[in-house]
Length: 106
Image 1 (cartoon, rainbow, N blue to C red):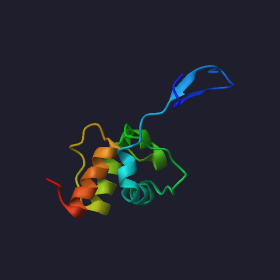
Image 2 (tube, rainbow, N blue to C red):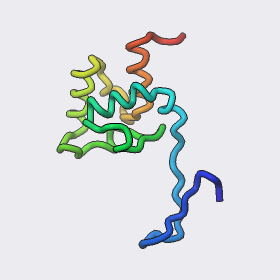
Image 3 (cartoon, rainbow, N blue to C red):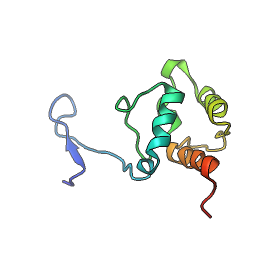
């Protein structure tokens, strides 16, 4: 078993392993994601778990918001259209926010 694996100790999934997706990418944008989660979903740090594989789809249904509602809120708050990011990947969105604030590193 790898160090990042966790074994469930009780319940119907007892003995099953959980492996969390990496979060190295999103962790490069801590200030952006904390602000984003607060402004878009009204979550404070510690009230959510996001990884490099997290997407807007993980948050649809909160406050009865659908994907288009979330995308519109991002447009309103950040003046960014993220509807072209079909996967809704949060890391891709955080990178876009970063580039809009600081420019493309190329």
